Image (tube, rainbow, N blue to C red; front, top):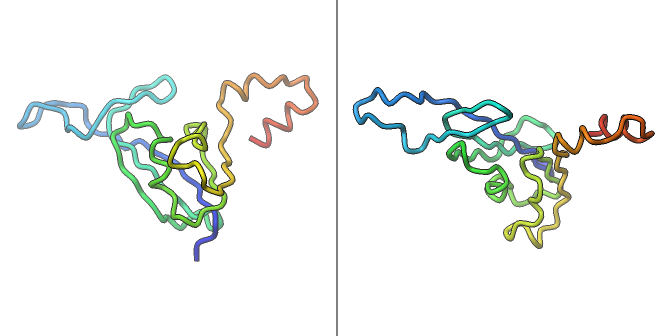
Length: 132
């Protein structure tokens, strides 16, 4: 039985970038994308998982690897979600038109550069880092 929360994540599924095939072309669905400092070629699978169990998959969405994660949010929700946990790729999701008016507690991770900018000397710095 699913609870009222969703955890979502994405993974890049690599494909061969070779054009040594019959059509001498890349697969039209596959695209390059940059993750960190490394380039990848393939598709991206986004997965919506029940927050309570962490194991029950209720949605899987596949797109080209260069499609932004935040654009696929609506497709990953099962309709009953009250809390949604996302990584930093979903920053600003609550401002998207299809998300407005939904009673959802968005738990979106802080971007890495903001997390690194928290001063360690500050009393709350280590606590905020641990919380993230």
